Length: 279
Ligand code: NAP
Image (tube, rainbow, N blue to C red; front, side, top):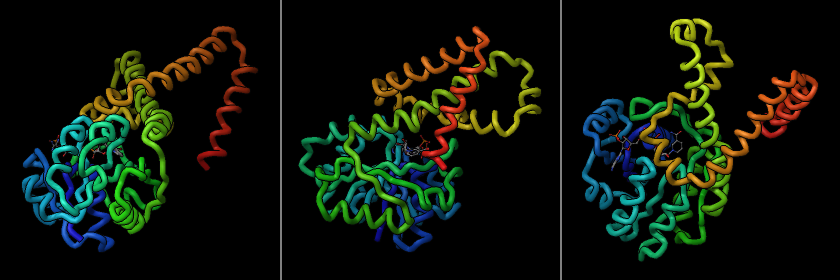
């Protein structure tokens, strides 16, 4: 199987590593705007070769779009213009706008929308790692709009890793990811800014940063090039979740002002019940 990956960064690169290692891909072709990223990917043997967009599409059985989500809005229709039997899939973090951009495309059936729920705070091919997706969950979105053979190929790709497959509609997907992924990034960016604003002595932050602070603020290292397009596309859902989050913060603030530590205690116990879901 020949796989062409457009956007050979963290996610595209990690997928290439997994699919080469497990034998699903005999050949991986990289397409990227950045010559530097392609050279790095070749040096790390993440891809076998790089080609132009047109060559990469013509040579592929499966084409994977792994650019930031704003780029995908223009890229996907132009890739679908050029395919015959090939399957096209994406790995982007938002879906409603992308799917409406190709709703009436004559080759819509060749496209399968997906979102592997795995990642790190780092970017680029240097951040690509083996095993990133192992045992994690991936979402297939609006499956009924894709051809059966295209869905079968994409499921085989993910099952080869192996990943667990969940099926969702695009609107549902964007609401759920606002909760489980997008808000935690805003929260982490805000926490980093809070500490940076209050603590002017950066070396002290570094010395005192313990496990708790480091793990909560880890996502604040994520790239704005990837996240601004996500917030732009999922703005309404993220605003809903953010309003709820601000209400929760305000509750804690008010309990501290009132010195009501009994209620504070119960709120922490309520929060502890997240263990039921995540353990
Ligand atoms: P990344 O590491 O920044 O990789 C994106 C790559 O796409 C970069 O090499 C970038 O080059 C390249 N690119 C940009 N515009 C392009 C174009 N027009 N044509 C070809 N290549 C282009 O980002 P990532 O974290 O892998 O994210 C990729 C996708 O996966 C995004 O849609 C994101 O929403 C999704 N995703 C991310 C995560 C996560 O945790 N990071 C998890 C699941 C899904 P430059 O560096 O030169 O811009």
